[in-house]
Image 1 (tube, rainbow, N blue to C red):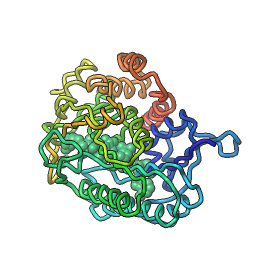
Image 2 (cartoon, rainbow, N blue to C red):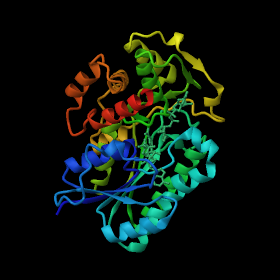
Image 3 (tube, rainbow, N blue to C red):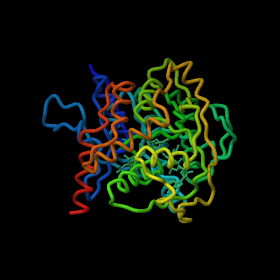
Length: 363
Ligand code: NAP
Ligand code: F7E
């Protein structure tokens, strides 16, 4: 019997990579998706199979984290071996505009799933997508023992969800683990997160379609890794003998300014001619510096990310240039062939879909 996994947030960056990874491990994969007036499954198109096909192993179900009804139903009926809870309102800046909604989906969404597990009485393993944003203003490097001091409604909601996960592990013996992930990026990153915003703008400026890029705080420092490597570690956490909490990150810090410089210079552009500061992107409270101490994951999961900061920039800029129908500089492809030629498809339908959307916008 293949193992069965249920993923919330399957249409997001991490959910799409994790689904792809689990299918490569022969899992049957079920994903929760929100009803939307336009397709929100672009990141899944290359792995989607018609459910009428008897060999299909990917199944999508409508539902929403703000309501327990479908979560209870799915967990009770599917009896998944593993649940990866990745769904959330995940944008930090948006959480200042929508604190109540963020608390409901990002915070209480976790409780709804844990309660569904407890009430159904099924034996399953649960992964909670916790975040380095929980550390907030605690000085780096941050590890599993670092106190939390969140600096946004998003960070505060994740702290609540983190402790609910620990509580269900202690109170009800649920196999429930927190992955405390530092920023991880990819060509599938949402367009309003800073890395993708930069690489898309670089591609469009390179193609002569855009002149300026407006950003907020360039001095914030983050520990940026490559998303496909992080979803492998999520899976490893649920294969351990005991549940636990794990920090994942590269241990390297870089500022937003460095990301800008690297991305523009890779495309042979002078960033000073294009980047302007717009105060509307400055957050009411900022997280200044995040650097992971992921030694526990290295020791207990044998996990160590290999794709470096400069390499992520190249992979993302190349993909965004190709999405515009132009030839890229090509280093990204070589990096992936050498260092990550495993289960994921870096291009294919995802870039084609972006390409089609871009083409429609200009036609
Ligand atoms: P993402 O691309 O923003 O994806 C979020 C997913 O959640 C999407 O599938 C979204 O669906 C779904 N979702 C949002 N609200 C929902 C609701 N009310 N009901 C059902 N589904 C809902 O995020 P990501 O980067 O893949 O991150 C995955 C998880 O890890 C998130 O929980 C995030 O907070 C956390 N995390 C991310 C990072 C990172 O650097 N990427 C680091 C630490 C933790 P739609 O597609 O319909 O919007
Ligand atoms: O911001 C600065 C901004 O929105 C990074 C989420 O996946 O990782 C992510 O949260 C930095 C911040 O990511 C712009 O002020 C400057 O200091 O890309 P971001 P994030 O806030 O770190 C964590 C780990 C998560 O868990 C979250 O789900 O970049 N910045 N100018 C900007 N940020 C954005 N978005 N847009 C700007 O124009």
